[in-house]
Amino acid sequence: FNPLITIANYVFDSLSSDVFRVFSGCIQEGIFNIKSDLKITNQNFMSSIDKKWIYKTISEGSIFHESHVNYYDNQIYDQILDFYYQRSITNGFECTLLFPIGTIKFCENLMKIFENKLIILAADKAITNLNQFESSENDIDITL
Image (tube, rainbow, N blue to C red; front, side):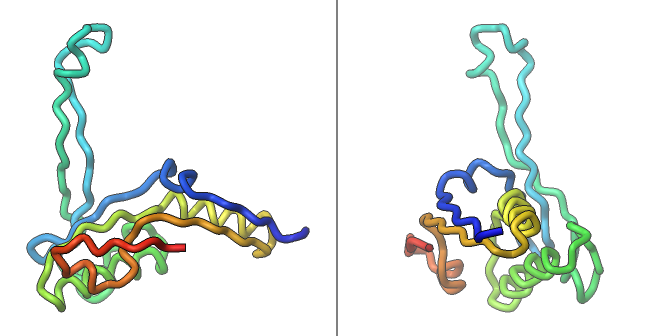
């Protein structure tokens, strides 16, 4: 195979992501809850929708150091979660993490199909420096 060259910007935004937060020393999974008491055919359905985030604690302590939770059953993914947890606890701040699991699996599958001969170009506004998590300013950069 020749290498696959992919230019993908908004493709990745449409793939699934998981939400986590570090709050009160715990790692929590974010679950977006949507409910309505009206039937979907009711013309007031959209305005009746109740939307809220629910957070479920998945680990009280570090994933690998204390509780040994394997959320993804994948050591690399779990180490990434643990890294953000450790960074948050060490620096005394709480954080929310959008984990692009759909994008990661998409890229892994392409790498398998094309025998690791793959170039992906993607640009987006993002945090590019871990210190930006601690800043209250909107110092968001373009990443490529």
